[in-house]
Image (cartoon, rainbow, N blue to C red; front, side):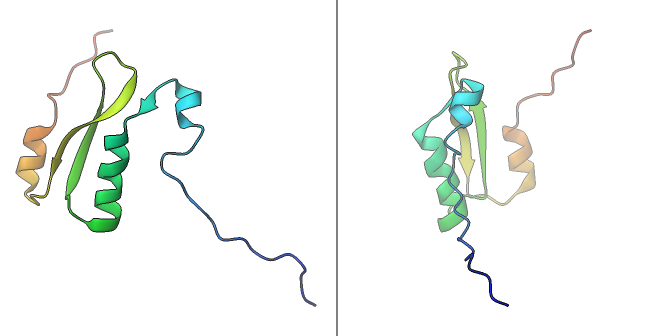
Length: 84
C-alpha cells in the first residue's frame, strides 16, 4: 500500500517570521549574520546577544573566536539579584 502523500522537506528560517510580531521586538540584521557565521562558517565560538538600549530590538553584544571559557565568562554581564 503506497501513500499518495509525499513528505515535504522541513524548512527552518531564522528568525521565524512571526517572532517580531508576537513579541514586539525586532531582530537586527547583525544578529542574523552572527547566527549564520556560527552555524555555517564556524567563524565564532560564541555570540552574546542583548536588547538594545531602547528595548526595541535584539542586537549583537559581543562575538569571539576564542575557545577559552574564562574569556566567555568575563564578557557576561554581572549577576543581578532580584529584590522582592
